[in-house]
Image (cartoon, rainbow, N blue to C red; front, side, top):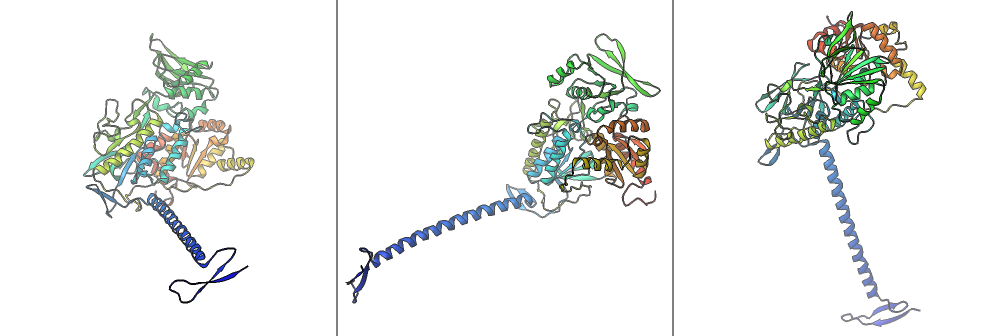
Length: 560
């Protein structure tokens, strides 16, 4: 089977043995085989090395970018197109946004994503918070305006935005050298900014006729979703001809026996014509055009109705009703900039370009400058544009950008944000029982004795509804004074108690004369609603009431 042969190799004195197996596999062939396979394995090793190097590069880049997102660039001074790091003291925000509505929140989110330090000063009690449903905002389905505001605020917080304590408002803006100084109305402090975005929105108008202040919050309202449930099987009047008025009339039709919608023009201005069709088909809704409310009527200072005038023929009549909802549009909140920016005859901020104003470094977004669209989505879009314009302006002015890794300490109280914790779900019956007992302290809130027991048990009690913007105004005012949680502050959302809420409101009405929430008690005494609480806080009177009631943590035993 095997045979050996002697083969002389040139240059070799000794013959070499060659072994063949099954014909002609010799040592030279074996060497060639090994050499070929070695080269193949070498190329394989090289390819593997290259792949590993590339993967390592990709993961390193992702890690670096992730680090950069969490820890944006150090203070960057833009000089002649080059960026150089600077460790100077951070004494101002890159952008301060005045306003926390759709324009302000979107502006803050975009500015933070651009690597800027951002502070938002404002309240979540604007017009969008009154929207029971937000149907015309793409990708947002099924829930109301307040849910959108909460969700967007959470998104902004995750992006690194700072929020001043809710309820603090900008009183005025002043230019000082290269910075802007924003004076805080409720806190008597100020904060510096390199640029400012004004997004303070608009406030609902009033009729401004006699007795309006007397009955405001009791029988005259501006939020149907907040106060509509107080008028079950009663007669109400809605004033206005736009989307807000039509929406209010539809909502009230679920509670009231008769709704009269009064509009001073012949045609309604509401953009949703289907809603107008719905109103015309409801037998207990009466449309009166062209009419105007001329006065409020009362009997022994108890609200009884309104007097209206037909603007076509001049005839007047009285409509008996238990309440009125004023939904006649809004005025821009631009008082804070009237001494620094150019405004038009309607009080709107005049724009240069998309969001610029008459002062370089100050930008405007939302209804402070929009007299045409007045939609949540257009406000949000203008907020995004204002943030982009602000960032570009800072770069063009060679302004240093703050180091977001180093927290700013500028003396303004900030809101504390706490990560949400998952709650263990309970069987619905046990959960409902536990929730009711927790809200009512185990007594029947429809009884006066129960309410009086609770308002004397806690220094501050707010009877509220979870979707009520005036209720949030009240709690924001208390938060400014440092009263934020139990056992000092007790907030009872009566809408969580189902049909009991109507009986509770009836009882509160007998005790305070107020037809709407919030009903606010301090030291066992009623002080009114949201607007009244804010007015007391701004005048300094609320703090003395809280001290007397021993409601301020850490000052409960201080000298009153």
